Image (cartoon, rainbow, N blue to C red; front, side, top):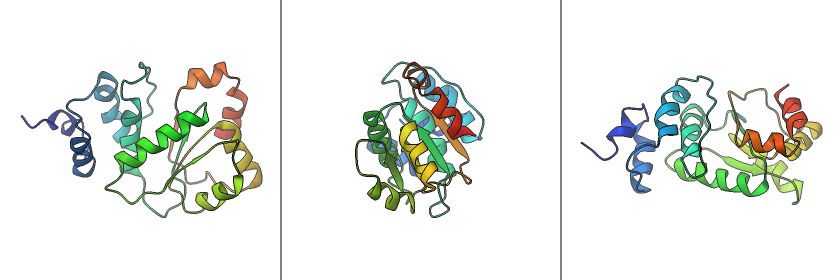
Length: 171
């Protein structure tokens, strides 16, 4: 059996399988096995799994396979911290290297001007709730075309007091 066959049967396409092979993935984790088929079908998924268990790939494959370059922001990933936003955006860029998607991260503590420029050509935005709200208030981020919303580390966002911000973003 091909070492990526267990990923192939989940429904992943050859572009992502090639990247997974290059990244030395061998077999899916439990969260990936259970969620990837659902995510690829556009189903809502609530998943809980330990840090390092592959959640980013579990939700990222659906984002990558369902976004089309140049059609505006089609996916929004909310993260509780700048560090997680940077890490997840980097992972998504790696998984999508055989695609031509523009993946950007937005978070506070840095100038908003470059973010505004990057959002104009973004297909996928990964960001913290506060900075996402800032962009929405400035009308520099349009979520009308978002098909996929990920609340990564949702329990942590609630613990950090971001629930009201997340609710505003979802509306």
